[in-house]
Length: 321
Ligand code: AKB
Image (cartoon, rainbow, N blue to C red; front, top):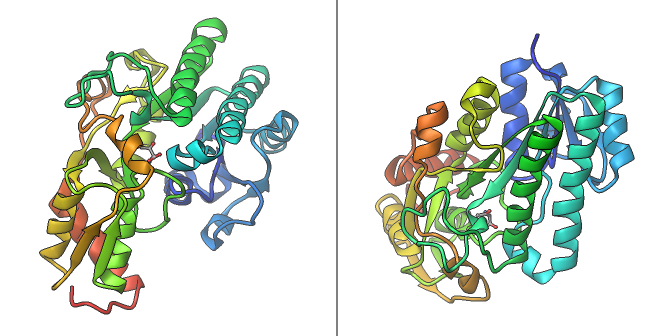
């Protein structure tokens, strides 16, 4: 029997692509897309949708009951940059949302929950290159604090209630389909639109700032793969380090420049620089590779080519690609 799935944050950067991927795999009717306010993208209406606020436990409970849900992908969250602007809201949405989902799951017999963690769990005292799985977790953003607390809570629900929660520490995610909203790694998506639409981009990070990144097709593969892995192979219920590529803003600009003639980038670091400086430049994901066979398909050149060709087909290019 295919799982009956509820996806919160279905209209967000990950949800907008994960929902269609899950529907392709398990059938449209199997995946309920939960959005906050707006009806969400047209594509989400190919299957059942509900409108709910993730801090409203009763609303989650009703969606689970009404649709016979046995698996939840709880994606709704505030990201790092917007979290620093609104720390109270970030705590409320990220922590109360997670606790509500976990409580509904354990009371309603939901079998499995996915929850996204992030490289933001690390802070400036962790090693910045090839940051190990078990490095110290002392983040300096409220987003990172909510991710560390969330990891601990997920692990606690596994130990205390036997709830099978699985989690990945996503790097910055790059998607051709949905824009990110309010993150520190957002520049790595914005830059592609700017290259194609204007031939120029002003980056909000310094050119030498390197961060771990991943192309969305790899993120979707990793997510579905960890959720389908036999429980005996999942050794961590807090959050697995996950890695695909790592590059600086300048390296990404140069790669795009190989395809977009005359592309120029200037740098005007803003408040997000401090956040980026507190994060790893690369992470060691050997535990994920060992435990459940993770392996990415996209590096910088292949991701760049694919992004430009997909976006180029959608946008009206003003530059030759
Ligand atoms: C952000 O920049 O806040 C996110 C993340 C790395 O978790 N993309």
